[in-house]
Image (cartoon, rainbow, N blue to C red):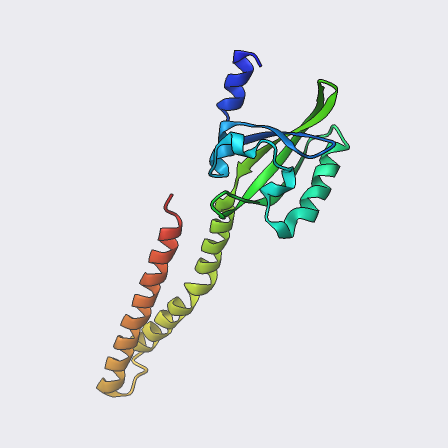
Length: 183
């Protein structure tokens, strides 16, 4: 491979794979492929393409690979990968055009780590569900205090304690959400 093409492929932040169409065996993996799978790129070469994924997704992955390799059109799909360390990550797979080399047909694909999307979904859930309960309770207590709809000093102290408890719960939830956004 010439120096220009090699620098493009090795400099990519996306994992790039080349697999033999007939067997599905990985013939090439760039440096980013090793990074996304927490291993050396050479450890990926020789594996079947479906082995990059959790076992429960094998059938779907093999089906997608066959779909990708029966057409020259660019296609995309999302899938989970299984790293060497057992971590599951969500990736966007973009299939590139097929090509022939040394009498064999190959497919290339780009894997982009989009596991942050799952984290964003978790954050959205936390914000829309977990935050709402203590916030609704705080608003209700504030309304009671504002409208003086309380019966005596003991109830007022109780509501202030509850207000403090709900604010503490809300603070803990905000800290949890914030920790999910740390890189």
